[in-house]
Length: 334
Image (cartoon, rainbow, N blue to C red; front, side, top):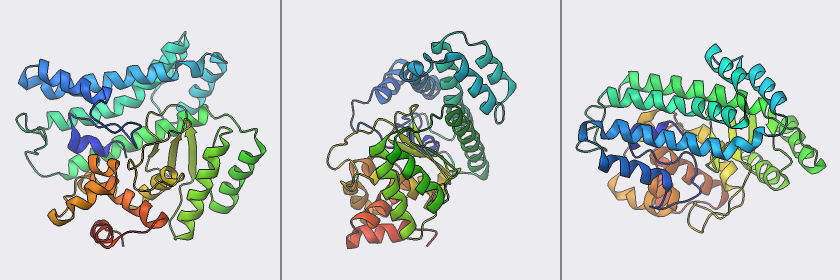
């Protein structure tokens, strides 16, 4: 999830991770459409990209500013300590100079989404997209494109993991602590931060149990994050993020009604290629209906998300013959 989507959806820039809302009224998507209509053709894509990312930064800032109101100085120091290990001096200086919670929240938001700016800028300046047909590539994907998305994703992953370590609050709920210990002792987790969320902790444990029982390698870091818009994300560096504010999604949004679908879905992202080429892999005509009917999320997202939705359903409910056929077609590592 995440960066791969930029490769085929620029300048649409569909929301990252499992979206809380599935529909045409998405605020971020509408901002891109508005930009595209009001901007000269030669600047449509760049303007739409920048407006989309600026909206994300603004939303993230408003979404997280309250996290820094209490213990502002100590949180700043923890961020400096952790981010100094993986980020450049420029960011550290910005954090040191932050005077208010809002300034600090914006600095972190800008850095997180700067990675998307970098990748998006490359894709646009590399003329990978047609101004007349925004879904059409001028050329096939190159090794260079795969390399830059790998680099950007890795940098973003390091930043987010360091930020989450800095913002970690040890759990106090005995039931949550017990689950965190099981995840560490039985499933090899190194960093677990479930922030006293008992309901989420139970879902995470069930997801790890299910994945492990089916011979799937589980992530070594699992984090309940206060910085997320999406329900979950796999950073592809051994880390799964889950939204601390779990949302009851409508029936049909996901491929199962299981309450641990999201954490299992995120774990299963570790079972497919992390290449842009896999994310935009074409579905055979005779199986397109399977993708569209599997779930609302599968219908609007890229191939790697459809594969992960299929795998999640396979382990929870089982697949019908057509779903199994699509799963087998996409299961490259089998």
